[in-house]
Image: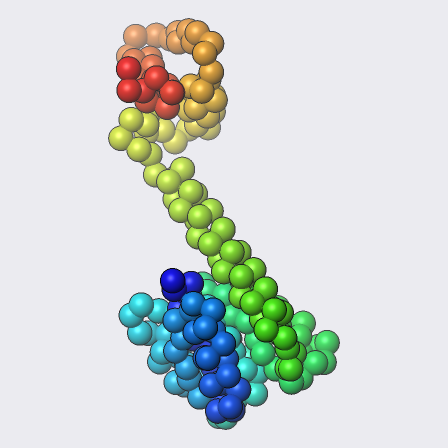
Amino acid sequence: MKQGRILVVEDDESTRLYLATLLTSLGHEVTCAESGEEALARLEETPPPGLVLLDLILPAMSGLDVLDRIRQTRSLPVIVLSTVARLPTIVDAVKRGASDYLTKPFGEEELQLAIRNALEKQSLRDEVKTLRRRLATPGPDEPVCGSPQMLRIRDVARQVADTDAPVLITGESGVGKEVLARFIHAQSGRRAQ
């Protein structure tokens, strides 16, 4: 069973082959790149990778430059791999958007944990983005409103919809009492009745 597509960006052939073999054995689909330019080109493939393992020291374009370019166009986790264990370098990589920083040599379990954590965080970010978009876009049964008072009424209506308490809606003729009542019903557990 495939766990997700991972792009391995590593100029050292033996390390690249080791990572590709290990990740494939763990159920991931793996593509590899030897340079930053090749990595950026691989990001345009369909389907794009869901995670990047990025060596810091690459020919021509540094790993940090590749990280910057990825962050400009994509929102995907990047785990930096490097023999450089200096704190300023680690902090710089994380500030630029790296999900994690592993110092070579690293253990298989350490790599698996970093990948799992990065993918879980990305999944949560995607879910939050989807939920925010849904909340910002009114559904077919949701009243369209923009004023702060109506937004508050809509929020209260959502809260009472899940209760068994009776709801009294009052107001002048034409203010949307029936629309609000249909909205509460559509949000409630009795919407099918």
